[in-house]
Length: 235
Image (cartoon, rainbow, N blue to C red; front, side):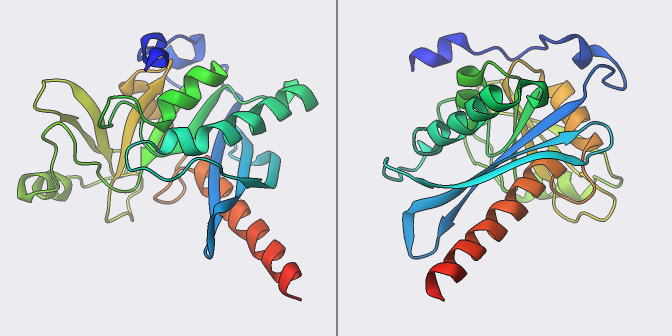
């Protein structure tokens, strides 16, 4: 866990302290979609969206081979290398479109070892990174129990959230009602070079639906690309 020593969970960029994120122009979202019949083959997707318009200005989808086996709690070692490659490809191809922050479908410090995929990816790319998960990872005493569900029921409006503190006393993340129509929260945690408070504000600002647009668009595009590839192969 040598990388963990480089983890930064506070704001490092000027735009992060501005109420409207003045200076932030590009958000990145990444996703992997696996073949149903072979979990070693996937489509890696990187999208970059303009901010605050949330329009896709760059997308790259390509097939990859995943060499590392799936081990619970060690997803980063399986997925991060191909995501880093996608970001490096953009840096070499068109650095003007490089995202200023990445949003990942997964967790940051809300993790069994306090070092999830968003931490791993953020450090290796040297970019601010946020983990956004659709389900609660039950670690450090956090449980999806009656108390947790009661807190969720108290979230009335889009943007309402509550922080989640583990048994260790560490604030690990936040549960956010991302839109007024959402019945389930999303779970946000700092990955690298951003505070939890800023991460929550930013994620809420880029949610048209339950899931933030960068990861939603990356997921849509990776699934479409994979579907086309498999359809072509079977025709």
